[in-house]
Length: 173
Image (spheres, rainbow, N blue to C red):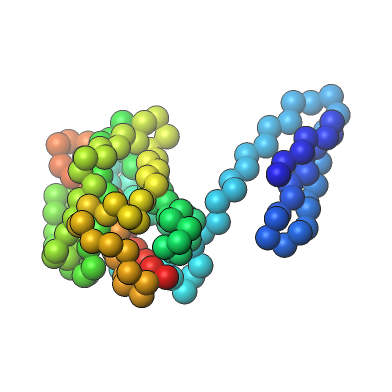
């Protein structure tokens, strides 16, 4: 729940019952950037490999938001530091692998499943976001508590080559 008083914004956290006031300044325009998602707990996510530098000069990053809780089904993948207006899709699989592809490193080993029906564009911000439906995985499997899936974003880079973000392993619960 967010309430907007005249000189700031109060944020109420239902989980803790605590509220926080972010003050505004009278006579100025106040802009608030709020992110309501929470990262998946550290015990459920593990890095597999880093993304190699792309045409932005940095490696693309992958973050996992929401939870790895199957019942909540609120897992979101977020990739940033992508070239602008770049197309790509997420890949997943149960195994790690390290295969050079284009200008990057594919760290999802066989068998792989691709979210290629969901082609995403990084737009002017160089970011993409994708909500995973754990009950409609591209490998056709049902979600199983304790199973680990590895996710990575594969994208078209400037100059006609491809590259990949870092890869993260997520253990479902």
